[in-house]
Amino acid sequence: MAPLLSFPGGNHVITCILLLLLPAACLQAGNSAGSNRERPFGVNQPAQLSGVQGGSIEIPFSFYFPWELANDPQMRILWRWKGFHEEFIYNSALRFIHKHFKNRLVLNWTQPQTSGVLRIQNFKKKDQTVYFCRVCMITRGGKEECFQSIPGTQLNITQ
Image 1 (cartoon, rainbow, N blue to C red):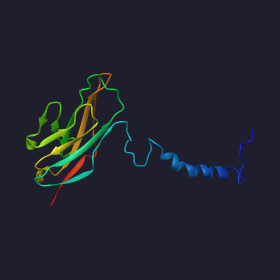
Image 2 (cartoon, rainbow, N blue to C red; image 1 turned 180 degrees about the horizontal axis):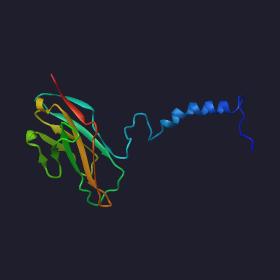
Image 3 (cartoon, rainbow, N blue to C red; image 1 turned 180 degrees about the vertical axis):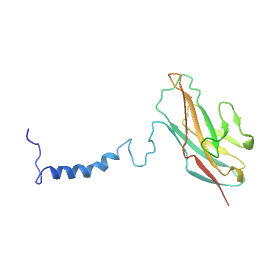
Image 4 (tube, rainbow, N blue to C red; image 1 turned 90 degrees about the horizontal axis):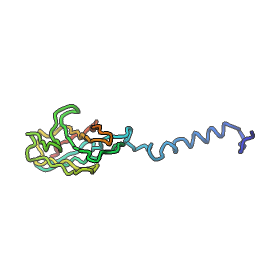
């Protein structure tokens, strides 16, 4: 079979052209350089935020997942502080708020939204740490899926 195109220099020219086109192909949807969707599910939060002591600070979050949800997915949002495996400070299903945050935490989120905001009112020096959003839901197959932000959000006090 004869080639459809013929270039001076033969296959070397075609190889060079293909190598030049390769980076553009990698930037197509789903593989963009700015994409943080390395997995089919996850939680997005800002890396760090600053707030004024005594004021309010808000941590926005969003999440994504590939599963088909049950008719009643029982979605819930939980928050941890200080470390990835540390204690919970908030649980939307149990209406639990850690004693340190009594009357100071407000979650602006309702099922089935995939984004929301956690507000800490009367921001204190002791609140200056890392916060991790965790999401749980029931899938169509009846399995509970839970996942959490890995880096979390570092909160700092500004002067």
